[in-house]
Length: 349
Image (cartoon, rainbow, N blue to C red; front, side, top):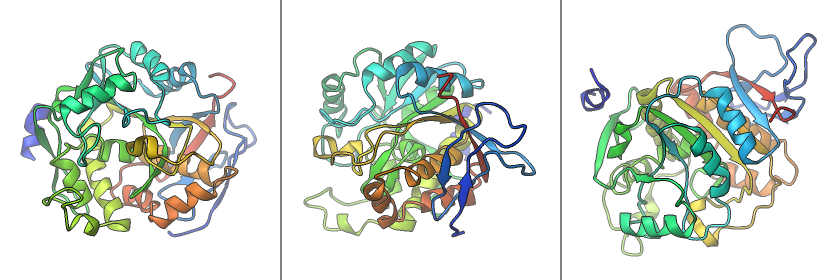
C-alpha cells in the first residue's frame, strides 16, 4: 500500500529536574538546572539512571545557521528523498520570525528540500495563495521554492485513536514528500499558550479552509467580523487536544521520517501570525533544540522557559491558555517518550 492509499484508507506534579553530569555520564550532557513545568507530558531525567529508553534532545545556546545545521545532523539519520521543511514564514514584516538568512544554509544543506506552508484560516497576508506569495517575497523567502501545500486543495490524513477528530484535511501537496523537517520558531500563542513543534505541524500543515477549521473546532461559519460564532471556538483543554489529534496524524504518516528543531529566540507572547502587532519579547533568547521526539522537544522547550529569567509574561501566556495540556495530550496519545535527556552540545555547535 502506498502512502496516498494509506491516507485514503484510513500529573499534575511539580518536579525539579537537575540536568547535571552524573558520575560516569557521557561528556556533553547538559549542566543546566531546569525547573520542570508544573504539568508535564514527559520528565527530564538528564544525568539520572532510569530503566528503559529515553528520548534525546540536543541543545545549544548558540543561535546561528551553523548551530542549526549541527543539531539537524544529530537527528537526521532517517531523513531521505524529497524533504518538506515546515516553518512559519510569517505575516508581512513580522519582526520575530526565524530569519531567512539563518534558514537558508539549512535548506542548502538538505538535499531535495523545499519550504512548505499553507494558507491561513483568517483574513490576512497569507489568506489566499496569491497574497501568500506576495508576503513570502516581502519577508525574504525568495532563495528557494516555497510549496503552498493547499494551493490545489487538501487530502485527509486519518487520526488513529484521537480525542476528537477522525481525520484532518492537510494541504494536498504534503503527500508528495518522503520526509518532514519541522523547523519551529518557539514562542507564545494567543490560543495555544505556546507555539512549538506541535503547533507548527498541527495547524501549520492543515489546509486553510478545511483542516484549520477542524483543528480550531470551527467547521463552518463566516470569518470575523461577520462570524457570530467566531468567539465560541473551543479553547483551553479542548483546543490543545484538537491540536494533538492533528499532530498525531502527521507523525503517524511520516513515522521515523520526521525530525524537529525548535529555535528559541525572540519569544514574544504573540504568535508570528500576528505580524507587526506582535508584542516585544520580554524573555531572553535561550538557544536551539533538536530531537526525533515531538513530545520531548516541546517539553524540554517549555522546561527551559520555566527555568529562564524574566519568564513571567510567557509563563502567564502558557498557563492562562492551559497550554501545558498540549504536552499531557501528546503523552496520552503516545506521541513520544515519557522521559527525555537534554544534551548540551554548545561547545561543539
